[in-house]
Amino acid sequence: MTAQLNARGDVAVLVPAAGAGLRLGPGGPKALRPLAGEPLLVHAIRRVAAAPSVRMIVVAAPAAEVGAVRELLAPVAPVTVVAGGAERQESVALALAAVPAEIEIVLVHDAARALTPPRLIESVAAAVRAGHPAVIPVLPVVDTIKQVGPGEGGGPGEVVLGTVDRSVLRSVQTPQGFRHDVLASVHGSAAHAHTDDAGLVEKAGLPVTCVPGSELAMKITRPLDLILAEALLAVP
Ligand SMILES: Nc1ccn([C@@H]2O[C@H](COP(=O)(O)OP(=O)(O)OP(=O)(O)O)[C@@H](O)[C@H]2O)c(=O)n1
Ligand SMILES: C[C@](O)(CO)[C@H](O)COP(=O)(O)O
Image 1 (cartoon, protein in one colour):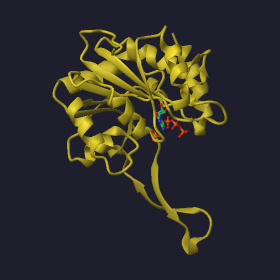
Image 2 (spheres, helix red, strand yellow):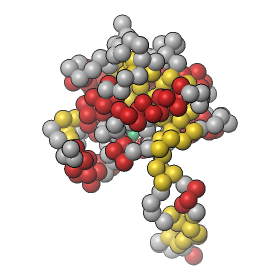
Image 3 (cartoon, helix red, strand yellow):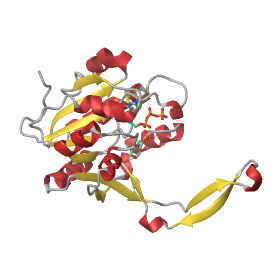
Image 4 (cartoon, rainbow, N blue to C red):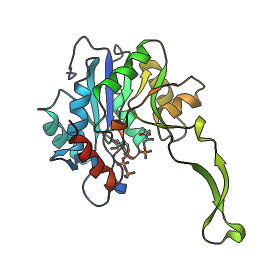
C-alpha cells in the first residue's frame, strides 16, 4: 500500500538520500549523520511532511539501510522507502518509479537540504500547478566567478581565462518541481548524467522556470555546513 500524508494533496516529493557524503568527511551515509541530535533525513522529512500540498514522500535510501530508514522515519511521517542507486540521478529514477500516475506534480528534493522550509516546497509546487512544466528555486551568485584553465606550458596551477558576468548566473537549489509526465519522460530517455533534474528538462528543450530560493535550503555538503546548519536551527 502507498504511504499517504494529506489525501487531498496533489504532490509527491522524491527525497534522494542514498549518497555517501564523501565531502563531509569520514562517517556513515550523510543523510543519517546527526544534526543537533537527529539525522539530517529526519530534519528534511519533517519539513517536507509539513507542506500541506504533499500527498506522498518517497525516500531513496542507501541500499544497506532501507530497513533502518523505514524504522527511523515511521514516527516522523508516512513515507515509502526504496533502495537508491550509485548516482543521484539513478536514485531519483528509482524513487520516481514508486509514484502512482494519478499524482500530477512531482518534486525532487535533496535530503542534504535538510532545513528547507515548507513554504519553499509550497511555492515550487504552486508554480508547477500554475502551468510551468519545470520549476527550480534559485539564489543570486554572491562571489565573483572566474573561468580558469591550465597555465602556460602545462605547469602546475591555473590561470584565469576570463570573468563571467554573474548577473546572469543563479545558484540552484531543491526542491525542483515537475509535471509528473515531464519528469518521467526525461528520466526515461536520459542519455547523460546531470547534476540536477532540471538539467534533463533543459536538454529536452522544455522551459525551466525560476522562483526565489531560500538561504535555509542550503545543501549540507562540507563540515562547515553542519556548523552553519546547527546555528540556523538555533535561530528562533
Ligand atoms: N547515489 C546517490 C548520490 C546522492 N544522493 C543524494 O543526492 C543528494 C545531493 O547529493 P550530495 O549532497 O552531493 O550528497 P552526496 O552525493 O552524498 O555527497 P558527496 O558527493 O560529498 O559524497 C543527497 O541528499 C544525497 O543523499 C543519492 O540519493 N544517491
Ligand atoms: C540538485 C542540486 O542540489 C542542485 O543544486 C545539486 O546539483 C546536487 O549536487 P551534487 O553535488 O551534484 O550531488
